[in-house]
Length: 167
Image 1 (cartoon, rainbow, N blue to C red):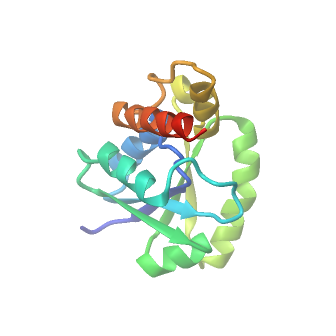
Image 2: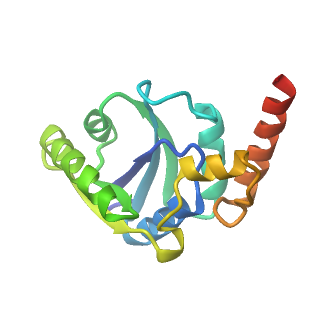
């Protein structure tokens, strides 16, 4: 497949409908899109393993033939070079997202020799949805079915049961 190869990086713990909105829209714009799970040892322990997150994403993008799922450790700039990517895709929900993502985008551009970042505004219905908030509401007993794909919700329910039985 020719044309720009874009990378949508994130922890995706778990992938939400907000993430999927960005994935679907980016997949329409870019001929090749890699959803790349960041393995970040500086973040607190994720709820889901790397393998679980990749599986949930693969199930979520199964109908998108130009989207692949991968993971990386270390600098995004190094990963971009390794897979010969042309562009980074980032979703923005609120103004504060732009403020923090702007400096990261400039650093990535400097480190990756001119790979730019394309910012996509979140759809209004998902502008408040984050993985952290979804997990918090879910574990406090709230209904998050509107915010995650059905198979992700099932995986979250299994995790809650296993955590409940472990205590």
